[in-house]
Length: 366
Image (cartoon, rainbow, N blue to C red):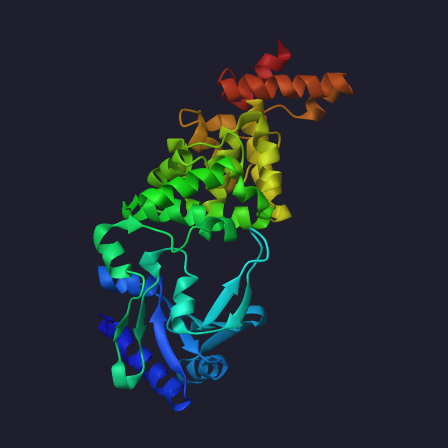
């Protein structure tokens, strides 16, 4: 089942792990994708024992960089060939409270698979030379994939980690799979009991960004709305075809802000985005919400956001206002009279009633 393109690398890692006395597997979504014949550049590797030496071996053999997450004894390795590896010590997880990051302890591959989000991802293939590619499927991953079913491994899954609610919606939309009856019931219960509210805004933002990165965005949003999960990102958030017009995640977030109308500013602030990103997207929202042309040049991102929600807008509507404050001062205006007239001209320009600087100056003279 392991693709030819990954066999040599995984065999080498397994051989090195075996010399250290470690058991080693490729696990999770990578195995799911192998089975479905899908290409993947992200491989999750699990070891019974510390993966520290194996991470160093990978860097030495193929080149790249690594990052250690000490809390979970995990190493993230980015190889020079573009492959991404997560090397993890097999572990048990315990959640002190809903939504908290788990407390972990070393354990076996079975316990490690049991902590996975869904049965379809609880599958392991050995990468040791003596049994390379041997399947270990204690929870019916192959069966779940064959049936196209999303099923959690235990009934406390969503209370332990509410981000799994959003993963279920993403997988259902991405793969066109159905959500198993008990899992669907528990998703509805979790939304009704407001489990996502225990998550930090940063974790909610991370899940929402992953949603926006999905290719089948409309289908994923349909799942979010079906199970009442979009409201926890922000109340009133719902699907609109304009969102799909965004070329990247930032543009899609800006489009969502505009579609939320007066609540768009609060939406942007609640996502806890970098200040620079908030400032730029806020500029697009201000123009759209005010329905008037800007006074300063707009960035490419701001222009793309506004055009996505206003596809019929004239080109000149997003150019800086044709009338400048100095021209109004030269006419003897000052203070609020300048600002009110600038605001007036911005609205006329947005509406297309003024389409050039010449028209603006003629209007000003009249």
